[in-house]
Length: 541
Image (tube, one colour):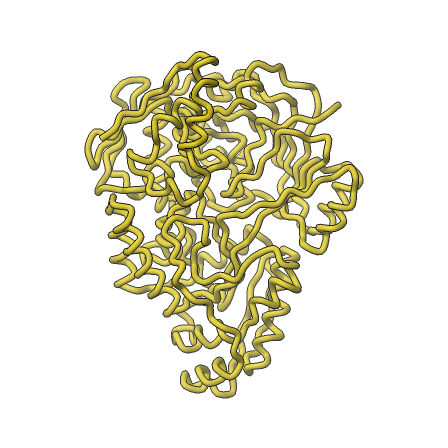
């Protein structure tokens, strides 16, 4: 058992240890994903005191400038209540409004957030000490009671309950001390508490607003809510009383720009400062513009086509395997992504702790696909539907997959559904096949597998294939409790082997991430989870 304490170090001491910390810290995304007490080392707490890097400390001493930064993404947030949805567009906005007790920086290192220190009392008890200088956007002081309220509320949500399902109870020991009691030992607890769904809400604000809370969200984050013009934009404003100091600019706008080409055009005209998810065929447009920069990096994301395993003919694993062989993933990556990705060998990204590097991809083999369909009783194929949301890249993937499936006798109709309705309807199981991605936000296999494949997580929690396998359930339950990293790897290896063999998904690719940015912008950094923190951003005026 280790105790983690916030260390107050003078600048000279920090500098004297810089080389040592750099040598010991490590940048491998797999290094620190077991998230036990042993994973948050003393050197991290020294180097990341208060959960801030040097650029954030500089921001803390600055006065926010009177200008606007516009960020564009491909969908409107489904909910500005962190417990209302677990989708990427929502999380990207919520990351600016709210804070979590623990944070994961761009190197996926666990650092203090609203909790300045924590201690594992025993295998099922954790104690967190909160900062005493934090205010909510409504002027209320952050108290332990707000943390208790937030985590218990998250646990009850059908959208996010699985993220903190390990919690048995949460108590306020005093105004600034929170005790979390676990139902069972849970290895990745700290990374789950760093998830955007584990953001801390103000109990008074939520209680008073009731069902209208989503229209007036209150957090402790660097930006406070101003307005949400549904389908168009979300407007935020720098929070002057942010505990790390105000941001360097006044207004942050998230624009909903569904068409990828339109986001690129917005960059070219200067209407957009940062555009997420530039389409591959626009890469050269951005790179060739002297005023723009394309930032690219690996992500924790896996793209897939899910099968509704509760609907014929997808109840038959031979059909699911056949379609994995029928689709040429290399062609998707080459033609549609222009090389920006790698074939998925299984359900979780190769950058995630627990990834099984012995898995082999389903080879593109039309004859093998036809043979499996014949064995399953569908020698002449069948008709089905492929759902996608209104995303240009996914629509193109659906069209290419449609053509490839036709070669084995499967006639697939494409249905394009608005993002919010897409999440609702796939959660309800109305689909046959659907295209989606999953970001293993915590960097740990538990999050990448439990939500998508455990039988208790069907629907909105993540298991939209409605997959059931009792052995997989047992393995995923065991992986959560096991504290030994090597034993966890063995558990997740076995689980992935079963999942790949059962093929509830058509495994597509491990996705890279990118953003197009005006060169006048500085301080922007891609986060592996895709929830990019904009507090450190500023713009030349």
